[in-house]
Length: 134
Image (tube, helix red, strand yellow):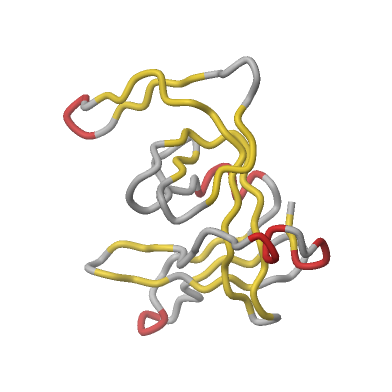
């Protein structure tokens, strides 16, 4: 999770389900002007646990790096009606995300960084329509 990003980055904890055709790309710049160039823009999916059980998230227009943890943009998630409280539970925070339709997705805090625990969906998880959130 990152408050300072204006887009999502797909790591190896999600599954690519569609690559734009023709392929669209983006350049990603980070700390010390480190830059990754010509990164393909994809639609990807990941499974998270909620208070109602596991759900498959569909994430559109993510830059696909394919390694490490995916990075999700707080700004874009909030823009689409989700409530985010990344304050840790011991500090009276929610430490999670509440989707526009009421699902609660907890965050993990490891070494002071906030993560959404997510894994690539298996075929059956990807095709279970009722448990997908657009």
